[in-house]
Length: 340
Ligand SMILES: [Zn+2]
Image 1 (tube, rainbow, N blue to C red):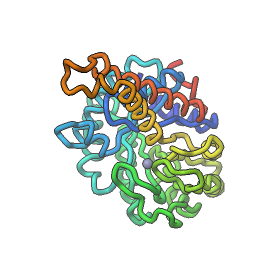
Image 2 (cartoon, rainbow, N blue to C red):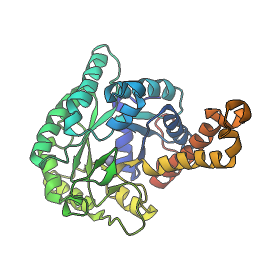
Image 3 (tube, rainbow, N blue to C red):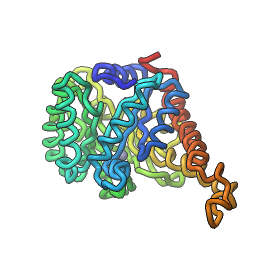
Image 4 (cartoon, rainbow, N blue to C red):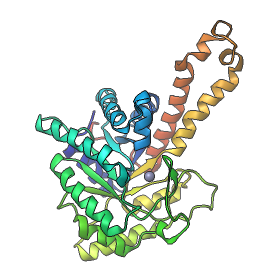
């Protein structure tokens, strides 16, 4: 099923109150989408599937257009998730300011048309990533988008600070610098600009040393106490209010690091690299162990049961689904579904 705006809010609030988080899986194809859905179903967990602008562009095939791909993703996911025994929210990941007019705003316009027809919005949530802008300017754009999202029943994800590493061909500026670590004062500035839910519901990607991609142990210095400092500062200035945080770049994090982040109010954990790796590794194992069948000089000399894309695709999807289900276990969302 796809969650309504009210159900999505209940899913996020349940995580915040219950001290667990939901994985948000980046997908770029029908195969990776099916793998994510299967992983959530196996874990009995609600979940989030998401596309970046570049992932959506890939999804669009020859059209080479992110907007087309995002619409196609939403249609396909809506059809496939309808039969699933868990709630699957649809989200668009990192949208930098340069893509807002060609990607984010047209998708919001689509949702506007749908809502006026009495339907659900096209997506449950969207991320606007203004982290390359000065914070005040980032928040000006974010506030304007939040107002629009609020009227459509859509949750807006915003970013404060810079996630290091590289995702979708975009490198975080200033990796290795203090910008990888948000300050409590900056987090309060977000609350001043966007409210505490009264002006629309938002998720906050607050950076605490997180980096996109997978690195050798010790490369990344996570400081989840930054998230706790932000909660304390917000609670003092806004009577008990709490941020709902998003953890970007979770791949390569230890179970202890994930637990610390979730304890400090992370409700959505993006998982990309490790899911990609699980998918591709299983496909590669198939190719290696069926070398002659798939690398024959012509189809008649090969092994159809080995080169049929379904044969390796099913293995790749099963492996990625297993990684997704594992993420549900680690984050505590396994067995938690509003559909149950
Ligand atoms: Zn990210």
